[in-house]
Length: 252
Image 1 (cartoon, rainbow, N blue to C red):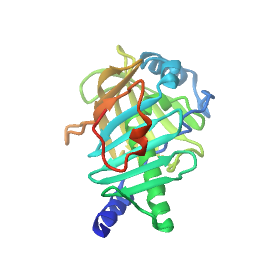
Image 2 (cartoon, rainbow, N blue to C red):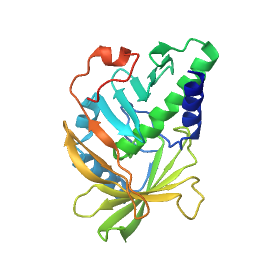
Image 3 (cartoon, rainbow, N blue to C red):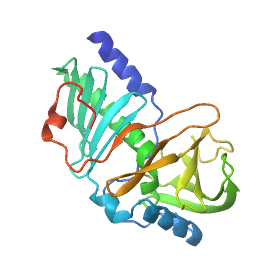
């Protein structure tokens, strides 16, 4: 069990973190944005299903890098699991429980350390799934950069996204390509620091499908590597037993 707990901690410490602005905020005015960038961001939200559909969507489930998670947006509950490891947290208080092989981890210091890391996983893993819905969050700066062609040869409007005092890594920067015809983000680039001239990576944002009343995309590949977010679901209901299970569950 000790080995598994150590492996869990190493996994949490080693993950790349991205910023996630307040999830359920009612304010939709970015910290700073130009008129064209605002128009493009509004078009993206509309084509993704709209702000109301996003806010009304309560549950999201997905597999990211062999980690399965379920997020209750309305009740701030997040369940994370990998192999026999399970963490269940409140995304506002960061309190919760950790289980190894179905047994609760009770050491207060070790438990809170792992819960804090699970909180970071919520931020990181959910941003890879729902970033297009976060363009107009408080603390998000958007700048229109013009038009470019994506790695797949399609024409796109390009936005730069930076942050002011939100998320765990507000020094990050993103470059987003929005397809001219579809009005959806089809490519993104991540800069570890907003001053960096070259991105850490550039990947597709494709394979959109409808989940309930919203759209989500699972393809994050690029010419160098394939990467997909799997088992995406937006169920209308999830039993409370799911958020109380000590062991890994069947995917929704």
